[in-house]
Length: 380
Image (cartoon, rainbow, N blue to C red; front, side, top):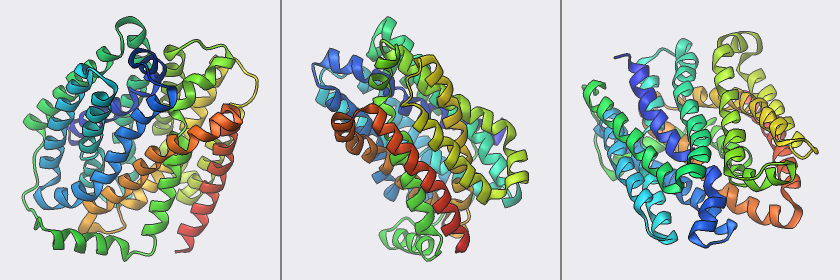
């Protein structure tokens, strides 16, 4: 089977398990008898281990082979998602989500590093964008299906379906994904040497700081979409799932025109305009609009975000070609560290100033992030 297709299945499963929890927070809070702020920690329980485990999984992928790492990660992800569906209490759901997040981190970054190994730089952004279609589709399905399924069958069914999808991806990767013929040394000193190679590039810290900011500003507010939509006429998880899935639709639209955008704007123009578009969309959320209109605005936000993010992914694949798995692991670690910190930082802001102010602040800072990152990284 096509190389990108198999990686896409694995990426789909990982993204599905990530985004499926976002619309469920009010349902989880009610069913588990916890506060909404405690429920929001379930998002951080997935993303923070995802970020931290990158520091381990990146060098492991460089050493044992990225395809083997993808298979191992899919195995643990499948088991952890099944445990999430069966967990009897808030604490056990939290632990199962942490396990799932930790090993989901071995899928998407390793897949992009594998693309970097096998695809020439001139075509790499387009190959990564095709892989992103599968990842974005997983995000879309995770948001849309989980909201509807939770209304019909409950939140446990959502995690159960995610486990089945991850198991199917594991079977396909085991049967069809061919491994590398050469491997490196798996040791602490070897891992440190690979990270040192990555960080010696003067652009590395700028790239990692930018993607950290993306995680905090763009995805860190996702757990608050459901309560944010209530004053706009929404009633529950289903509407939040639709709105978040519209963000993914924007990413699919982006993948259809990426070649034309790169040709007309260049990478630096994509970063500046992408940050501007995503930021303005988030600012618009604070207007007195019906939730269906806000869902349409999320399409625009997703389009702008992927203009910025896909460019950063391509930059990351060239930071250290000899340690590409470690470079992409640091990239993903920073991205998901931002996503884990985002809800923690956004909770007090939304509580004190309201959800509208939260999204305005995130939008303004996103515009500044895109313009500032383009100027700083280009100057390097």
